[in-house]
Image (tube, rainbow, N blue to C red):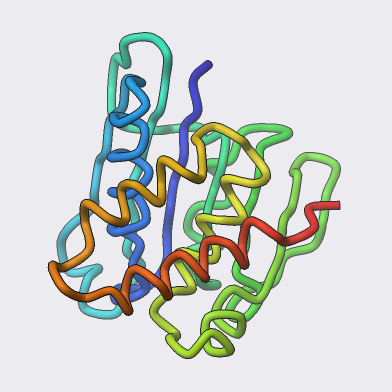
Amino acid sequence: MTERIIIAGSGGQGVMLLGKVLAETAMLEGKQVTYLPAYGPEVRGGTSHCMVTISDEEIGSPYISQADTLIILNNPSLEKFKGKLRNKGLLILNSSLAKSESSGKTCLCQFPFTDMAIKLGNIKVANMVALGCYLSARKTLKINDVLQVFKIMAPAGNLRILEINEQALAEGAGLNHG
């Protein structure tokens, strides 16, 4: 099993954090993993992205030219990366900020992650709603292991961050993927 994931959105949407959580969880589960963040002028409001590869075997390169899954949080990112999704790949799209038509070439999971995060009380957890959606659709990693990584990564003494991330993950995991 090898899963190649490109995560993209605007600076400040938690793209790097989402990628890091995936990578840390994969390591916790004993899988091979690469995490390639794209730092640069993107973090000042442009399109920010990272690439995560999870595999049972050694990974040759962290760069992804054809992704199995795209997790896209806004429209500029969709335009920039839609050509990198392999045929029959999975597109997880934040419909609060981007729209796409379903095609026979793509498996589309389109949900309003930002709106859902606002209802939870913190717009910043849209990335974790998207992560829950991904975990439910792909089953590459175990949700309980992601929760374990949340506990490791959460700032000491800040249980509210842990709680809201867990709620967001559960919201995303509960979405119907049709």
